[in-house]
Each structure stands twice: as structure tokens, then as C-alpha cells.
Image 1 (cartoon, rainbow, N blue to C red):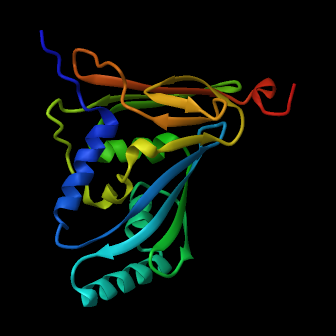
Image 2 (cartoon, rainbow, N blue to C red):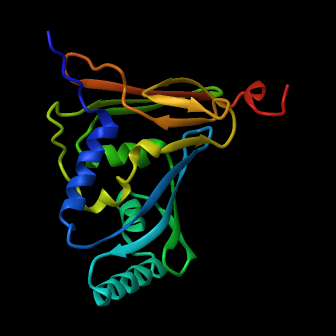
Amino acid sequence: MRTTRRPGIVNATKYAALGALALAAAGCLTGNARHLLYLEPDGAVTWSVFQESVRWHGDDPTVRAEQERAFLDDVRAERHPVAAALRELGAPWTSTQLVRDRRPYSVVTEARFDSVDDAFGGLLRRLGLLEESELRRDGTSTTWILDCVVDQAGAVPGEDRVEALLAEVENYRFVLTSGRFTQAVGFALTDEETTAILQDPASFDENGCARYELSWTDAPDAIDGLE
């Protein structure tokens, strides 16, 4: 009996990102994006996006100059796509720093959210991937559970205003500010269980639902340097 591997969050968001890029095939801004989501013990998060080697790819040098100038103007005014997308998810605070103001450009954008569910869970909701999300706090332990449904054919509803956050989803890092992760489903743990890397889960239930789960503790014996 043939089994079909469902795409999961990582591949599903890739499909949406590729669709957006296809619309700009004649010329577009390209670069590398790294996403670090710094998790506080109570589940609050600071989402940091590092855009590196950003430049316009196209044959017309006049268009290239115009597009890159527009990009820099938007960055300086904090209305560039990444900042706009983070605000669209409800971030009450954002900050943008132009790290390199010559080609290729580098930009760091940060946003703070009251919870990781408001941030990353909000992104999945806008893409139609999230069925349910819950953040549980019990003493010094916190658990974040996401139940996600992805169409088997890979069709994902598009959301133009958050597409700027879809680049290289497989490189999303959830980094604890203190403590360590104690359990992970759909994530790979590294850096002595202080960093979780988003992955696709190994299995789905009969309804096409995949569970992602992260648990962490900030108990004193879990913090580096404390006995």
C-alpha cells in the first residue's frame, strides 16, 4: 500500500513562499533570512529577523537602482515587508536596524510579542495551517502545543501581508533566554537543549493533523552555572 507523505509546516510554507516568488520572476529582491525567536520562561518572545546579502536581481540597472533605493527608504521608515508583517501579526513593538547600507544590504528587524502563540501561532493561523494552539504554564515548566492541518496536495491559502516571514522556514530557531527544553515533537534540539529547530513531524493522524510540541523549564537546576 502506497503512503503519501504530507508536507507539514516546513514544506507547506515553502509552497506559499515559492508562489510569491513566481509572481516576481522578472526581477526581485533576494537575500538570506534567519529567524531567531527568543523565548522567555513564561512564553513571551522576541522575534529577530536577520536579512543578509539583500540585492535586486534584474537586467535593468535603472530599475535595480530604483528598487534598492525604495527598499532602503522603506527600511529607514520601518515600513519594509518584514516589519509590516510582524506588525500585522499584532506585535506591539518593532525595531529595525540597517546594518549594511551598501550592496549587498543587511537588515535586522525585531518584534516583541506577549506569547509565542501570538507570534508564530499567529503566522500559522493566517496561512490556514493551525487548528489549535495552547500555551500551558505549570510552576517552572511551560508547554506549547500546536495541532496543525496541512492539505495533502500542498495547497496553502496565501496571505500577502505575512509572506515576508516565510523565507527559509526550516531555519527558524526558537532560543530559550534561560533554562532548557525538556521535550520536543516536530523540532530538533541543539545547543545543549537551549535551541529548537523547526522540522516536519514523522507522522500525521487520520485527519491529516500533525502535533508540534515544545516543553521547557526554568528551574534553577536547569540553568547553566547553577547547581
